[in-house]
Image (cartoon, rainbow, N blue to C red):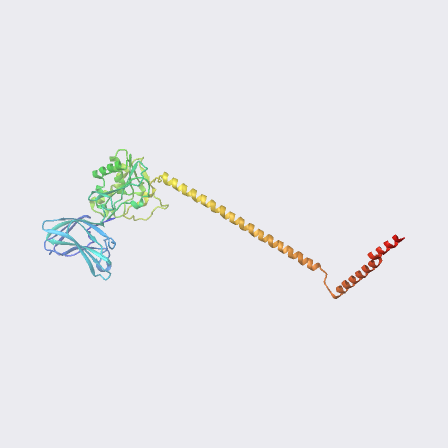
Amino acid sequence: MQTQIYWQPQTMLHELQGAVIDFVKEDEVHYQNHFLPSGRIIASWTDSDNYFQNKAIGELPQLEVGKKYRVKRFIDNSDKMHAYLSWRFYDEKGQLIDQHYQNGDEDTFVVPANYASYRLDLLSAGVGSFVFHEIQLAPAVDGVLIDGDHALTDHLSAYLEVPEKVVSKTLRVVLSEPAFRTMDYPIKDIQSSPQAVLFMATDLMHCQSYYDEKALDFISQSKRAVKAKNIEFVGYGPISSLTALLYRQAVKGSTAVIPTKEELELPAGYNRRSPGLATFLQSLPAKIEEERRSEDGLLTQPSLLANDAPVQALAAKGELLASLTYLDWPLDKKAEKKRKAEEHAAHVQAEKAEKLRAKQDKKQMAGQSTKELGSANIRAVQEKKAAEEDEKPVTTKKSLFRRGHGFRKHQLERAEEMKEKPTSSQLLQDFFTKNRS
């Protein structure tokens, strides 16, 4: 993002004695002083200040420690008076820790460590006059606002964003809505899509030159670079919408997408700008409706409730870009095949794991059943043995007496049987007695 620093009536001034200051417009201030010694501070800007003490509000952006920044100075010096810049950095106690002087139109500096605040001073060498336009402050990149973008003019830049694989044959040109003091591309407001997008940006003070022939040449080059057949111009504020319609009218076969009439309200305070800029802003609604066609696309507000605030901020409505149609990213056949193979392998592995787990569960249940059956058999044998033990007669003195008495009786009966039955000798004697005769 780039910051524009302007010399305004509320800017802190020094050495007013003998000075003549004419604020023609926001980016054109004429200064004249024929009695000012060289090296004196004329005006100052700070990033933060005590309003109750100095009656000044910080106008400089916060900087990142250790980062390199680029500064462009737009000042028309005279032959006798030369204006230059001084960047001063302070710590938390207000002590000066670093200072950088800029005598050329473009320079860079590195933000020192442990800085708490910084100040920009406009100084002069010699006497006479000069014209102050603006000072541009932005991170030092390989481009204008970001790496890879191009400067079409001093106040108009463009950046072509091309995805790895372009599917759409339509080049989308998004025109940034100009804002006061800042200049940037609405890249964060655009969803990722396989479509080439050309971003264009300018600042509010030069918004009347948003439509430029050099831009048409760059748009044609970008169209050929991405092999597009159609061009779609997108605007999401009053200035960018009119510019989109003008480019659509200049490029044959192109289309435009802009918000509805209700979304194109002018910001409060526009009539307090310089006369030329205020007149241009006031004429925007009528010019837009005059250039609008029925086939032009519309951007709608994504919020459910309308903003009923009586004061509209001077800012772009980047959220309107969310209602654009975005293409889905195409499927990479190799990546899709690899993904399916990985899913199949994972599915097979899961099935194997499930079968192994089921087998282990079955084995565990079988072992548990065998163990339970063995325990049941052991318990049955023990119960049977216990039952037999319970059925055995209890041995007492009486039972022992009866047992002994019965055994004696049995012996006596057997003895009687033996007496009645002849012995072998008697049988032999009887045999010989019978055969003797």
